[in-house]
Image 1 (spheres, helix red, strand yellow):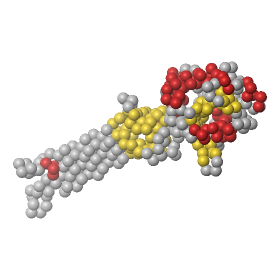
Image 2 (spheres, rainbow, N blue to C red):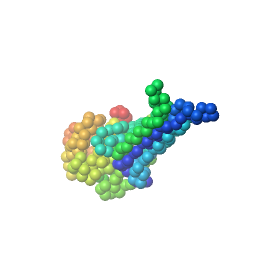
Image 3 (cartoon, one colour):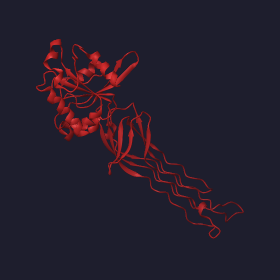
Image 4 (cartoon, one colour):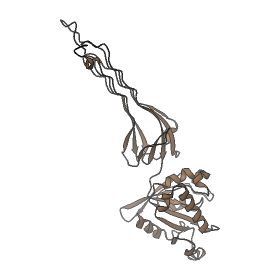
Length: 322
């Protein structure tokens, strides 16, 4: 299944049923009073968040949703039935926006969370409601109102405790595959990862956290270069950021600064998150000498996903912040 993190859909709640114009008729009562029933309310459009989904893929093919209309009222004071609600399943972590104004309608971060995004129309009153001393045989009823209709934008932001940040080919996917059971695509060329990958990292006997491998950023990512703006939004929900910088980077300190600049330009609040800086691909002890601590504002952890060097140290450091 492809990872899709943006979608636009049209939702139309059901219209309310019309009220009924009817008069009571039975033997020996040829001129009974009004007994027109009310129309049923239209069905709602409801969005339901579930942890069982992790992509908006289905909305590439199904873009229009229409709830059921309420049934019209009937004679003998019988009300029409309510229209069928339509429940749309989305992954937990989906942001719902008004397609015209861009206003946020809901932020579905919890499994099982629901929100009504379009309300059904109200059923019209039957003529039984309009009888007065002056007009005892009202020959009119109230029509049902239309259901709400909107264009909705869905935007998925992955839910993870830890986000891996770095330039392409910095070793993020390899690290995730070693620390968790995730199987991201790995190769020795840039932009292998084009969608976020999630993995569960276990530590201790019963504890774990969710780690996200965010696709590699490049300079200008906050302006959309390399799809960077779409990748950066997945970092917004993470609690801890782990920066990965290749041991063989020409200027590691500049790379770190560039990554910070990109995050800050996209959302300044990202710089307030706890962050850990790792130098990757340090297979040997002497590799630590190639990039000394003073070049960075943060203490460095020298790691190797191949030899698993200092990975326990990294997990323990993450644990402190969580």
